[in-house]
Image (cartoon, rainbow over all chains, first blue to last red; front, side, top):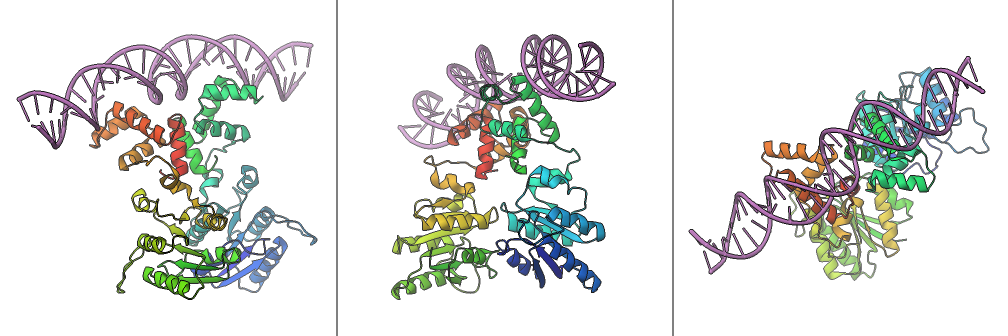
Length: 220
Length: 220
DNA sequence: ACTGGGTTTATGGAAAACCGTAATATTTAG
DNA sequence: CTAAATATTACGGTTTTCCATAAACCCAGT
C-alpha cells in the first residue's frame, strides 16, 4: 500500500474519517496541509529530498483568506503538479460535483475523483485501493464526466426536465408546467426531442431507463 | 448532546469513522463492546450504578465464535433492551437492509435505523442529532419498512421485475425473458398487474415514477 | 367430482410514449 | 438586411403502456 500520503484540505478538522480510512489502509506517513501553495512546496521538497509522496488527496475549493496564494484552487494545484510530476497519483476529493468545475480536469490524468458527502469515505477507500493497483476511480456522480466519450452537456434545463419526469409527470403535463412558468422550450415536441438527446447521451433504451441511469449518476 | 454512548459491533476496527462522527458531535464518553451479551451487561450495570447510557448504537449481525452467547444478534439485543428499558435510545447501524431482517424491528420502538455503506456516516450523524431532538430516523433504503402504513410485501419477484424494468426492457420483453427462464408469472398481463400493485403500494403515478421511488428506497 | 376463491392469462380500447419528418421561429453571419 | 444555420414547434403513424373486464387455470375443502 502507499507509504507517504499528502492531504490538502482547507478545513481544519479534516473531513470525517479520512484519517481513519488511511489508518485502516495501514498508511503510516500522513501529511496534511491547508493551503495549495503549501502542498506544492511540500511535494517539491519531498522530491528534492528523494522521499517523494506516493499519493496526494486534495480538495478542489479552498477558502481564500489573508494569506496571499499563488495557487488558489485544487484545480490549479492538480494542473501544476501533473505538469511537473506526471506520474504522481492525485485523488480529488471534493463536495463539488458540478460538471463545469470538473470538466477542466478530465484530461489532466487524475487518478481518481471522489465526491464528498455521498458514500464519500467508502468511495475514497475504494479509490485509494484502485489507484494503488494502477486503476482509476470516479464516483458514480461524476463518472460520466470522465469516462464517457460523449462530452455530455447536461444543463439546468435537462435536470429540471428529468426531475419532473421522475416525479411521474407526463410529458404533456411537463409541457403545460413549462409553458405556465415561462420555461423554454416548452412544447411537447421539444420535450420529446430533449429526452431523446438525453437518451442518446446516457445511452438509455427508453425514458424509464434514462431516469434509472440518471438516478445512478446522481444527476437527479 | 448525548453524554454516554455505547457502540456494539463485532468488527474490531469499529467501522470507518464512527468514532470521529461521535467526536465531531462532542460526545465524550464512548464505550465499545464486541458482543451482545457484553452490551447487555454493561447497560444493566450502568443503570445499576445510576449512570445509564443515553444512547446505544448496535450492529445487527454478530459473527459467532468460540464464546458462548445468550444474545446472538443485534435484533435479540434490541428486543431485550427495549423490553427492560423502553426509554433507552437505540440506533441500529447495519449493512443488512433486507426487509425480512428488518421487519421484526418495526414495532419495538427503535430510535433509528441506519444502513452502513450507503451514506452511512453522514446518515448516522444525522440520525444521532434527530434522536437527540426526540425524533426518529430511518435510512431511505429502509424507511418504507418502518414508516409506511402499508405493510408493503415486496418479494424477490417484484425486485427482479423492477430491475428489469429499470434496465429499459419493455414489459413484453420481460414477459419473454420470464417465460424462457421459467419465472412465474410471466404473461404480459400478469406483469402489468404486478406493476400496478407496486404503483399502488409505493403510490406512484406511473412506471417511471415507480422506478424513481424504488431507486430512492434502494429497492433496486 | 364439484365448487368457490384465488391467481394467472387473455383481450380490447384509450392514453401516452416513441420516432421520423416537416413547418415555423429565432439566432447568427456576412 | 438577407441568407443560412439552429432551435422550437407541429403533426402523423407506430408501439408501448395503461386500465378494465373476462376467461382459463390451479388448488383446497366438501
